[in-house]
Length: 258
View 1 (tube, rainbow, N blue to C red):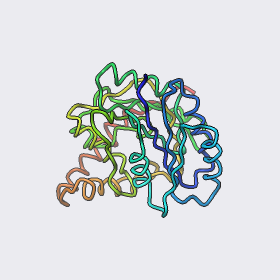
View 2: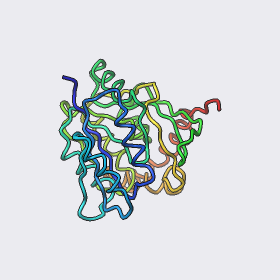
View 3: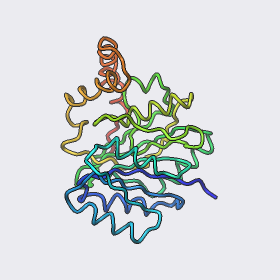
View 4: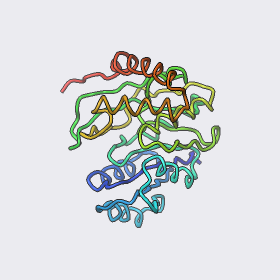
């Protein structure tokens, strides 16, 4: 039997996008998956939309946080309940291409890979292409990944059978970076990047990536709080981060023809 993939999707007031996101999972050519939807006390119609899919698909489950707790707690609650051989993540506003799971599971099995990720494309809030292709590095070591976040969380997948369940620290932002750092460190091997684009990342007006000052602040806390570095070491790592993020990683974003 093909390995089971557990897909973790946190929800919070996601009524505008969650229907499309779930459909992109239902359209996967790879069929052995479970979807864990974790609602973080939504106040819109998210629960009603999610429930519609839960009642008609036995491999879709809905969990509800008792209090609003943030994405890290939601993801961790999903990871705790996951039964899969692999764990993957898809936020409630992003989309997967139909062969995402098929290609990535095969890639990980062929390459004896513990952690993988892929290239992806950017879309706007209306789902229209921004003609931006974000290339995955072929290999990503812990040392390289410490410099900046090279893994689009919507493309990441790790092997539970070899690593166990890797959870995220309770930071409001950028906890996904810390999760993948932990996974790569525990693996002792580089993460491997699928060069094919397997997903669509939705660029939101209020996202961290759209606000450079917010990006810098939250990344400082990754080093200071998330990794426990001293203030001096955290500031030193931020100098490296700024260079890597804006002068190295930026070269992986390719403008495609309209």
